[in-house]
Length: 270
Length: 80
Ligand SMILES: [Zn+2]
Image (cartoon, rainbow over all chains, first blue to last red; front, side, top):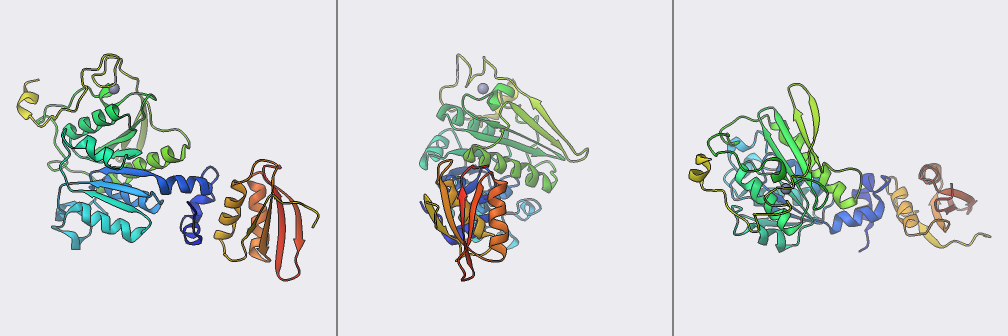
């Protein structure tokens, strides 16, 4: 592919970076990134990835835009209330950068469809921008089984966390957090407060990891959980190890196909 | 012109910041030690493009005034 003069101008500030160049920009333009969830995390992540010239961005979200989303989900606007989030996000992204091919999946992610969504465009990197534990485990397991790199993140209250999984280069999310917590033990974002900027900070870190992975630059958050506390302004990097007994990426995996955790009854018994 | 260039790029048709972007993309395609010939305008491009090449470790080996407001610069990739 050839980079046009217009693209040279649009991406000039990153093409002149050492380690990026025209070759790096071509990698970005040919990259395919899947963003699961277009809320607090997915909003800034999708916007920065679009601005950087990621050629294909997949967006997965079942929901419609709600007034209470707008405090943090900056890819959506007041005029979008009631519209499917994937369509609202697609419009914003295309307005930022018409170079991007935006693929929308207006679906609830589950064990039956997640692998097919990832395989639909053979995405290079996946961003978990969801707000609930069952889906986080599902995304982890799907990425491990398909050997796809992904960025995990979560935000709640004044804190956020993120880690990156790359096959063969460190622990997966399940190595660290074996199973989803009982469904009544943790509030979902819908029931708990969250400072809107947290999505901006952590979602932008996820986009940073995706861009670095595509460019092959620097060090990723593989083997580390980065924890951010907005009140104390601390960024803490906690070292993580692989769990040889991990149910999905360990030596004797017991999870060989995706399972849904949407059965709160059995969860509550544990 | 005594120097034999391996590739040529004309950046007189673009303005900052695309000038160096285009020049940089030209030198990317070369191997270390090969020479890129760059045609650029006097003024800002002449001031900044050779300096940016030096910053990235390339050697500016010759600058010729074409007498028509443009200059031709020869750059050796990774020559510094
Ligand atoms: Zn694991």
